[in-house]
Amino acid sequence: MAVVAVHRAVLGGGRPTLPYAEAGRPGDRPPLVLVHGYADSWWTFEPVLRALPSALHAYAPTQRGHGDADKPAEGYLPEDFADDLVALLDHLGVERAVLVGGSSGGVQARIVAGRRPDRIAGLVLLGVPALLADKPGVTGLQEAVRALEDPVDRDFADGFVRGLGVAGVAPGFLETMVGESLKVPARVWRETLRGLLETDLAATLTGILVPTLVVWGDRDPLLTRSDQQVILDAIPDSRFLVHEGAGHVVYWEDPERVAREIVAFTAALRG
Image 1 (cartoon, rainbow, N blue to C red):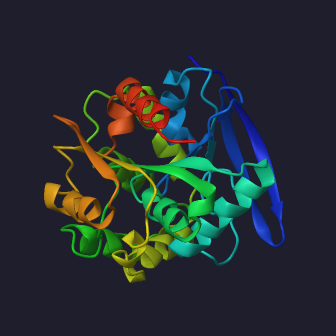
Image 2 (cartoon, rainbow, N blue to C red):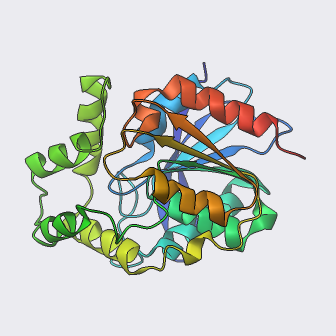
């Protein structure tokens, strides 16, 4: 079991300062960089980080506007988050990494994988949408987010977190995740969702040539099997794992299994 430590990355050059969790120790293999999704923070991967073997080095940043990261006035398009990821790799001195994207965090992860294949050894997508604007319920979420004011209502945040299909997750961990989502200002909820809906997400699937693992829970209330097939069809070197009975956030429901799957995937990578 890996020990988790938290640091802060001062990216400079006008970029935000980002907290990041670190687990494991450096080795010969490319490290993991775990990328959280909408209204989340590095805490979303805390159970997975602890389940990883200490021989596997991993980082989990909190992205701009989220958690305890800096919250600039603008820059909440998927490509802005992607640029921050590359800057973080530079800051950490990581030449190549395996990117692990959870939920919408997989969008910026795949942007980096497609644009900077020299920096990416592999890609893991955990409950990541191929497309988003076509999903039932997104219109209702967008309307609710438009009406948000600071401080964000706790009942709204609680409903958002628990609506992800999180059977069997410890209540204390869910409370932590609700608390993390309450750190996100209303304008960041709005601008981040707007960026996801206005970006051509299909285009972010093009040009990805690195080995890719796609993981999906078959009781995901947001993503269908056909949505995941769009990803598999677009990425030549991809394979698919299904968590039967799991909802949207498979890494909350069974972090030990997800950790094992990531370990097996990284062990099979070339170079």
